[in-house]
Amino acid sequence: MRTSNVTYLVKKGISSVWKNLLMSFASFSILMVSLLLVGCSVLLMMNVNTIMKNIENTNEITIYLEEGVTDKQLEHIRSVLDKNDDITEVTYHSKEQALEDFRNNMAEYSELLDYLDENPMPEAFLVRVNDLTKIRHVVDTINSIEGVEKTKAPYDFASILIEIRNTFSLIAGAVLLALVVVSIVIVSNTIRTSVFARRNEISIMRYVGATSGFIKTPFFVEGMFIGILAGAASWGLTWLVYDSVTSLFSADLTLWQMFGFFGLIPFDDIMWIVLAVNCCAGALLGAVGTVFSTGKYLKV
Image 1 (cartoon, helix red, strand yellow):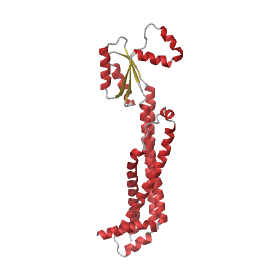
Image 2: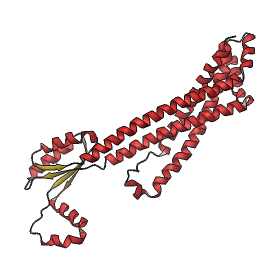
Image 3: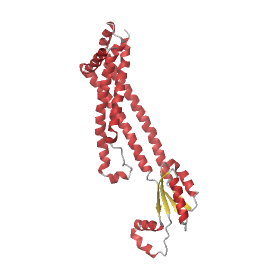
């Protein structure tokens, strides 16, 4: 196909958007809403995963050391913990620090501690794991270290959190899949209606000898152009909705931090990726949907 023909068909496809403004607006609106719903769902899933990860990071395994543990044993235990790939953070609590923490937590009765002949608090390590599903394995490994008396781990908390995470992933995946399927069906039907309204135009072009490619190209360009516009519009709306929602969680950060609502993904970090994905998805849906919808009317 010559360059002049390509230029003509591209111009015709773009001009058709304005000539058939009502149907173009209908396709644009459906595409925009579909992309908005899918985009917001994906961003919600990403941030919920972040929140779940924040909650997981609050888990702590307390490792109590045997009374009279030597400095050599202490360094050995720290070395083993530091080398464990399943452990992300290791904090040492001396007997003095443990007593001071207990004094602060029991401020009303702290004077009673002054009558103690010796410090009864044990030395301990506090560690965090990077995957709650491995918490029992980590505890078994820790208990086998010489100098460790016992460990205290949040097994119930870990089990509940793992169950919640798996359930949410299953539900979120099903909802997202349903949204994608429904969006494709609605977009396809809307575009099919738009093409149906111009079936006479397609038939005339076919009768005068126009090839299938020549007829489809303007519709392809038109669908792609509408899809890109819808993608850009949905990106703007997503930005507005996302910033409005995240501002709620930054109003009182201390309160929301208790529930893991911190470290949410800033839209500025992903805005250009979201724009590119929205425009590409819109262009693909619009172009492919339009071309497929014209096939029925090419059989003259």
